[in-house]
Length: 211
Image 1 (cartoon, rainbow, N blue to C red):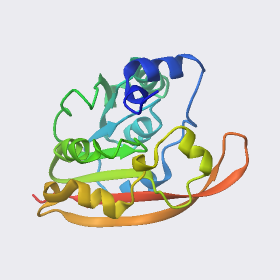
Image 2 (image 1 turned 30 degrees about the horizontal axis):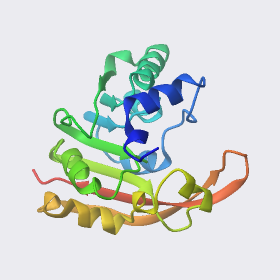
Image 3 (image 1 turned 45 degrees about the vertical axis):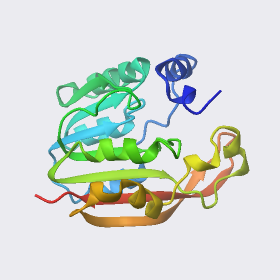
Image 4 (image 1 turned 90 degrees about the vertical axis):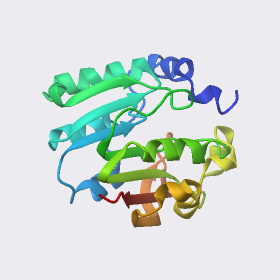
């Protein structure tokens, strides 16, 4: 299977449909760390998955547009938002980043662990950055190449992992005039699918667009 096939609606619909839950349901740790000092507004959650980040943001007063290639995943986002009483603050929109425009302008645009092929990253990152409103924040978090377990290569080629500095470089002049607040490798404790603990590094980019 190619890396592009792993980014299709068919792939993710099948993966979500095969199990009751794929992800933990908890918000990503870096999102919690980096959004704490931001006033709630309009947020775009890119690659929303099953909605852990989107619902967490909604509970904190954000109006969230959750986009994902998988309609099955988005159905889970909507169902969770309804169950937790924040459905009025979460809108789900199916979007294929490889073929469709990123919708709207938002005070916060957040994208976590969408491991993209290296050849496509600059174009897609720039499209995502273009959805940040003046004065808004872009938060991109991915797996840093440092310390990735050997088995990661079974699912993702090496070029799908980038450092924060590489992400800044790939965004290039799309960040002209922006303030790069954070561009760093950040460590965290994680748990492997078999339950064993592992220490991983995230590549964290937080940037603010000028007014």
